Length: 327
Image 1 (tube, rainbow, N blue to C red):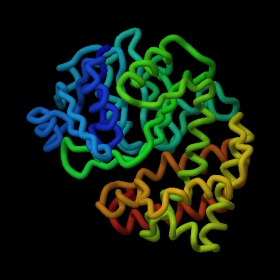
Image 2 (image 1 turned 45 degrees about the vertical axis):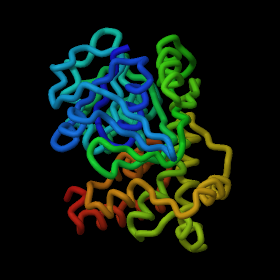
Image 3 (image 1 turned 90 degrees about the vertical axis):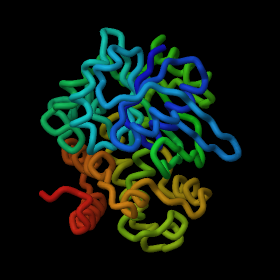
Image 4 (image 1 turned 30 degrees about the horizontal axis):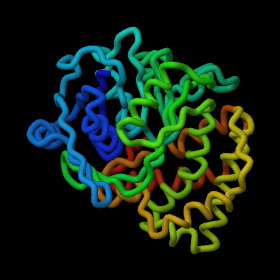
């Protein structure tokens, strides 16, 4: 299987390094700058506990160097995807699968959903440019439950989680999804072939929507966020809004916010990815996580006062620091 990783950060590196090390795939990667130099000279290095995995990959800044692939794993931040998508066509053949291993609501999420499919979600696919570059027929949905970081170019540190979900966007099962699951399993991942990956995307968003931006705003790890009763209640109220929206779009969540907060509490003093980005001065991945929830709520007529407040505050925080675009 020919696999190309687009986005050589923490999650792209976690997936790419293990696939390359498994010997079950011919792995290439699109990268730039110091990361490109590191991958060309040393390959990918993955540290996971006491284990170190090394994967040799072909690396280039130009997708035309690789040609059509069997599988393209897209692991860029949401705000970088509109531009990255324009470079993908040389990697796509008739049977190529595109697997977006990304946070938040993906561009394909509203396809075929009453109330959402009339127009692209502007928060994640402004102008529909991503959908035009990556036709829906190529897409297999993915939800990654993992914590990883990239402390230096070409090096990935895996902290926790190794259980991605993959599934057909329209639901059900398929041979192409099972082939991807089998390949990831052979690389050491605990993969589930999901029959409703849209729900899985929404369920992960339900948990991420509050912890990510609140941690960026406050600088607090998740344990401190949950230890403050006022902040914990605000987060729970925003999560209830996400649940109400989910019920309108075929993604009902039966659990209560307190149930999910109890799971998060077990992580201890955990730094979210958005907090790590804020501390490093990197752009905030806000639109795909909070902006998309607000937009979907408006489309289906569900009030979102707490989500609105969270989006406005975090957006202003980012603009003041130059890590979120001005209006």
